[in-house]
Each structure stands twice: as structure tokens, then as C-alpha cells.
Image (cartoon, rainbow, N blue to C red; front, side):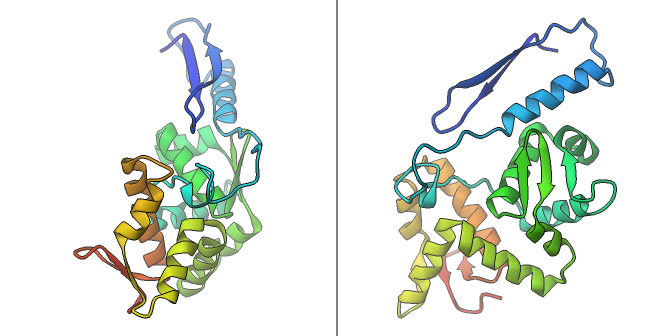
Length: 225
């Protein structure tokens, strides 16, 4: 409907691109020009600038300061299975995938970004492609999936590694959520910290890396399965 689209970057938020829409009204979603415009928008939204400095725990957006959107591990598993099967065979055009799965733009991007963070897929120029690890995950049984998921969490999600190290090192093998929320809030807003912790709890439980008590808000290594 609009005649102008602005694409914003995150951390910090600024206008990253502007698209002028000069298509005549009413617009036909099946028109090749319309579909090319949508492809261009998705390509721009999934384009990432190269970091100017190495990633570290002290830089917002990287390391422990990385904001993670809460996405269910079951949804991620289902998306990996969908991508691995026909007609995608490991490689999908994001607009087509979003349309087929009846997902909004922000939903498909959050899913794709989560899979990319975990190195199960790669986002590039508006496409989502399974990595070799993602292909393997799609064909594993439940227990083997959990093991692979746990390996990738510890390898690629710094706050997950931090939580597990603290639990391993403490004699009680327990730690309050506040211990990690306070550290996250050094790099992000309270809402982002809460969302990140929800993702961590959900993924960590699925991977059986730790247990979490909702009432006491405590992480532990007691019966993580």
C-alpha cells in the first residue's frame, strides 16, 4: 500500500536503506515487478555489515551482550525439517517461505536469525540455506538432535557458555537468574534481557544443559533432562 519503505538497522537503530515504491495502484502481488521488489527488500534486511572490531563480551550485540529473540526450539526444529525437505532441499527464498508458512516478515527473520546464530542455517541476500550441521540435524533422532543442539549452544551462544561455566564451578551447581540478568542489562534494555533469558531457558532445557525452576528463578544441574 505504501509509496516508501525504510529499512532500519539495529544497535544502533538508524535508517539503513530507503525504497521508493512507484508501482501503480491497485498492486498485484503476483506481478513480477512486485515480487522482485519484495525479494530486494528481504535481501536488504538480511544483509549484514562486517564488524569493525572482533566480537567480544564487552561489545553490545556480540558476546554475552548479544540480544536473542525467544523462539521455541520445537519451531526451529520444524523449520529445519521443512527446509531440508522438498521443495526446498535446504535452500529457500524468504518471501516464498514466509508466504507458504503464513509468517509475517519479522517472524521469519527472527527464525532465520536464530538458525544462523546456531550455525544451522545461513541468511544471505533474502535466502535461507541450511548448513551441513542443519542438514544433519534434520535427519537425526531426538536424543542425537538434543546433543547436537547442546554442542552448538555452547559453541556459538556466549551467554549459554557463561551460565554452564558458573553452574559447573559452583559447589552447589546452582545460580539465580539475577546473576545473569544483571550482566545482560549492562549491554541491553531490561526487555531485551528478559527476552534473551526466555530464549536461553527454553533452548537450554531442550538441550538438557541445565534445569530451571520457574518459582525460585534458579538455574541448576539437578535433573536437567
